[in-house]
Image (tube, rainbow, N blue to C red; front, side):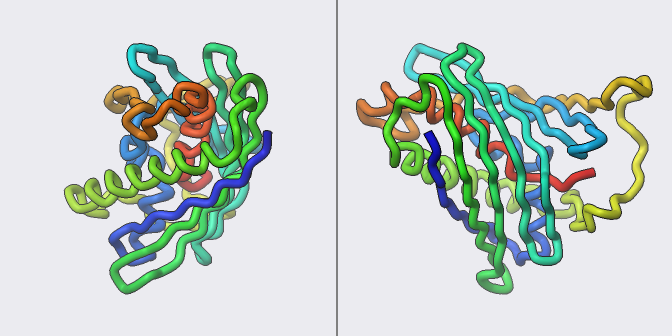
Length: 230
C-alpha cells in the first residue's frame, strides 16, 4: 500500500533558531511519544544513519518496532531536508519505508511552521488497513510531538542546538567510538528508556484494534525527522 501523508507543526522560535533544533536527533528524539534513539552509525555512502525503536502498546499488549533513516538531501539555506527511512515490526507483521520531505518557513519573527510530506509504502499484514486511518493518527502524533518540543525549548533554551551548516562541507570531529578500518563507527545513545505509546489513548475507537500495526510502523518513519549528515 502506498499513501502520502502531509502534516505540519509550529515551533515557537524564529526559523534560524528552529531549524537547527528540529534537525538535531539527539535533542528532540524524546519529544515523540514512544520513540527511543539508540545509536548513530557512520556509513561512507549514506553519512550518519540513525537507528532506534518505537515502543507501542494496545491495552495489555506491548510490542516494538525497529527503524533507521539517513539524510539524502539537506538544504540549510532554504530550510529543506529529505530523508529516507524504513521500519519493521519485530513480530513479522509487516514493513514500512518512506521518503520524507521537511520544509520550514517563517510564520513570524518568533515562530516557524514545518510541513512534513511523507510518501509511505507499507507491505505485509499492515498493508491490509484502509487509507485515511494513518493520516488521522499521524496528525495527532505530530501535535503531541510539537507540544513536547515547544515545552522542551521553553525549559532548556536553544543554546546546545547544533548550528546549521553546509552538509557538503562538514566540520571535522573526533569519532566517539574507535573502530577497525573495516568496521562501521557507531556511537551508542545512552538516553532514558522510552515509555510505550498507548495507541488507544492516541486514537480511540474500535478501528485502532485493527490498525495498530500500521500505526506503529508509521511511528518509526515519523521518528526520523532530524539532524544533518556528518
